[in-house]
Image (cartoon, rainbow, N blue to C red; front, side, top):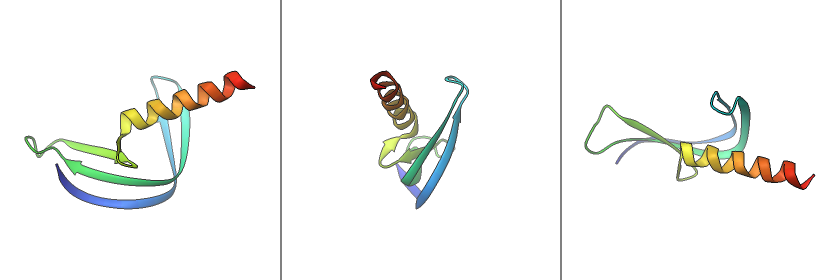
Amino acid sequence: MQELGERLYEIIYFFSPGHNQEFTTENVNLKIEKEQDNADKLHPNLNEMNISEYLRQKFNDLQQAAEQT
């Protein structure tokens, strides 16, 4: 993939309509890349992880924290 840019953000806010949940993440590295075989397709990555996987992981972390309380 061709890297378009990379930037460190202190705080990023996301909203997942699928989970009807707002997520906040801190000190995250956001990188936008173009797909090699389709230059029109962009892939955002957070901390070297696909954004969908990153948000899924954060949602699971939130659920586990809620179960422990």
